Amino acid sequence: MAFKIVVSQCTVCGACEFECPSGAIRFKGDTYVIDPKTCTECEGSFDTQQCNAVCPVPNTCIKAAA
Amino acid sequence: MNQPLITLDSLIEPIDFDALAKTAQSGGCSTSSCGSSAKPDDMDAGVWDRIKDHPCYSEEAHHYFARMHVAVAPACNIQCNYCIRNYDCANESRPGVVSEKLTPDQAVRKIIAVANEVPQLSVLGIAGPGDSCYDWKKTRATFDAIVKEIPDIKLCLSTNGLALPDHVDELMEMNVDHVTITINMVDPEIGAKIYPWIFYQNKRWTGLEASKLLHERQMLGLEMLSTRGILTKINSVMIPGINDEHLLEVNKWVKARGAFLHNIMPLISAAEHGTHFGLTGQRGPKPMELKALQDRLEGGAKLMRHCRQCRADAVGLLGEDRGQEFTLQQIPEDVSYDPSKREAYRDVVAKERGDQLAAKSDAVDTVKSIGTSTGGGSLLVAVATKGGGRINEHFGHAKEFQVYEAGRKGIQFVGHRKVENYCMGGFGEDASLEGIIEMLDGIDLVLCSKIGDCPEAMLKAAGIRATDAYAFDYIEAAIGREYAEAFGVEFEAAVA
Ligand code: SF4
Ligand code: SF4
Ligand code: SF4
Image (cartoon, rainbow over all chains, first blue to last red; front, side):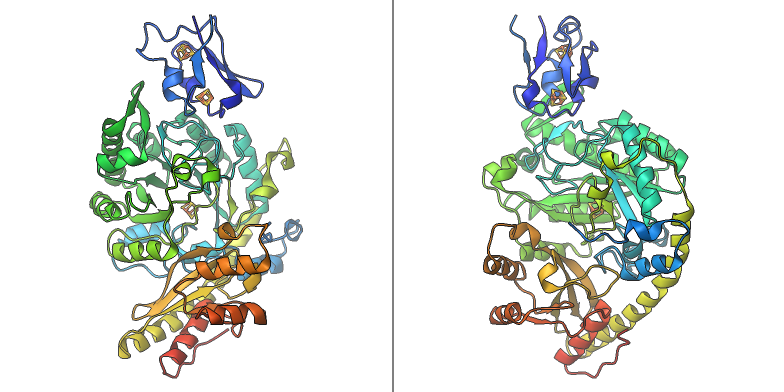
């Protein structure tokens, strides 16, 4: 149960990083990545996944195929 | 590439005062009259005192001082239909040109390197891509670090306003000089056509709701800044058919809430930018439409006509981009600030500023009196200049023209006509000249330092007179003469 970032579309704006309530997003190499072990899909914090709600590029923060 | 304003070589120690003086004379900013030279009648003396050395607002300062924007805050909390985030924020830049995104540390290094080489530097701004108030930690880290190194630098930032109310008190504490809010509407119905969504209080909002929230936060932010005495400028992007008429209303609202300047910028839109407006064929305003709107707003909050939507990482005097000289790879790991050049430069400038002012005010007075006594005919003049208030650019080299209107009100700078955007490479000579002629629609006279017979003839055929007779003269003095000739009155200006 986790979200992931479609790296090829990411603009590297970093908004998701500071909106993530679980501290699951980090800048690695030259892009942002979600640590699937830390990501909670925002459960217990917010109704919607923050990374997806703030990301300016549609379909870039998406549910990772389980 | 632009000509550098001063070669870096001319600035190696020991300080060469002649070189500095030359820099001051040649000017750097290619805009002569952008703000105004004298305190405008409807402006508070206290406000004028604070902006007269700011290159974005004051004509005099504009010639001699430079501003620098750094893009350290790439995250944004709203989506504008004229923006696509892979590129720069259209608020402060030309769409399609990507700035160098910097971390706060990198930005500080770059600012110091620039301050050491460009003695004109006086203002540091944080602008798009992204929103300075939303990506606040990075904005704050950059400002805090730089005032420790260069205490006399002025700080400013621009924002969409949504997160602004959360940081007003800190802005106050940090001594931020000016804030620019981009406000494109005061009616959510119109806002919904400009903003597809906002992110606010951990939620994505769309439609009317989104624009209503944005509008309330913008007004709140503006009011909070005004009560605390922070100068606030409003930028509006003119989008024909969507908010062009509505901007008259916006002007009333922002004036009532204390904005000291209202700046109308044209939407720049093309399919290849990939923005929503670009893809849906929404056009930007034509130069005469922009001017017509600005004319109607005159008398509202003071208009700023010289904004060029320069790039977010622009370095230099307005209109003169040196960003490419200061990309990160060119800056050493370790830079330390050396204040001596900036101080020396300031002394030289103080002297030079006087001369130009005098020549200008003579010409303006003459035109005013001729204009009034002859019933106020008006002359629209496009000038090719590299800066310093002089006619010193070849017609063929000009990337933009500065447009002045001479008439009953004297000689006023009324805007820019960019030619570069409209005749980019790949076209033949004639095609680009046609593009230029189209951009000069409505102009009576073109002044430049040199023009070939062929373009001169083509302009003439299009009803525009062009001359290089005033090469290297002060702009206002030349316009004054032409005006006097056109309206039949003897005129002796001190054409230096
Ligand atoms: S879904 Fe929520 S917890 Fe997971 S990365 Fe996105 S913001 Fe963080
Ligand atoms: S919000 Fe989207 S574009 Fe921005 S860093 Fe995160 S994934 Fe990339
Ligand atoms: S974008 Fe406008 S306000 Fe900003 S520096 Fe350029 S001219 Fe001044």
